[in-house]
Length: 95
Image (cartoon, rainbow, N blue to C red; front, side, top):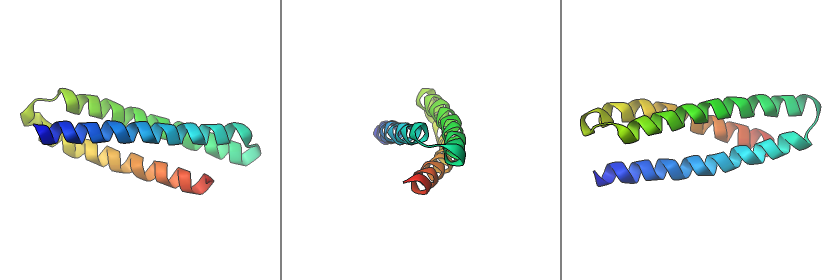
């Protein structure tokens, strides 16, 4: 049970950090112009959609029974990995 709470806490913390990264990208998009602005806005929208999916999956994970937790964790981890890659890609492209 402790492992479960630790994992969930770690994921919540990382989501907050990535939320800050998305906010940074949003600030850059507001200062940008033309194609760069359009590209940033598309990436931000995509990241927000993925973030919302991960947040929903984390909520499901937190409320899952011990038996269901293991199987939900696998699906969550896949969504997490995809979101993580998207954040890092967007950040590196526009830093």
